[in-house]
Picture (tube, rainbow, N blue to C red):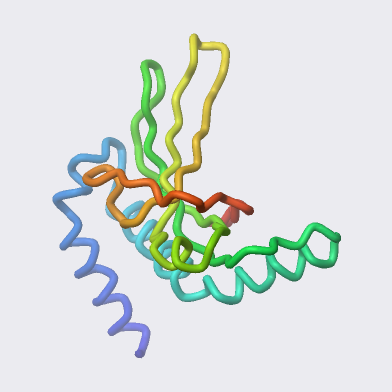
Length: 150
């Protein structure tokens, strides 16, 4: 796909999610395109990232002995004084093969506890829209967090 065609696809995709963008305060069109691009990169390079993490852990003597795969992290901010927003990243999940295959993303729930603690709960879920249908995948855990430089 040439550069102009790819840009057209990205812009059209951004326009399609325009309704969602109106719900996310402070998000501009470039932020949406950046988020879509990161999501695409996570899906495209997930197998290579997963292999890299597994090699890294094995080389350090702490190999994951379950099935693994890399999925997007979808961040949802909750709480008073916590600016709402949505972010995307990646995580490696591990567990029994059938449960890992059902896992589509990791929902990151963030909240402030009594203004003294910041809590981040990583929850493997079975869909890419946990804000609409929040369903944990039992038996699956998060074994690595992938930060993506933008």
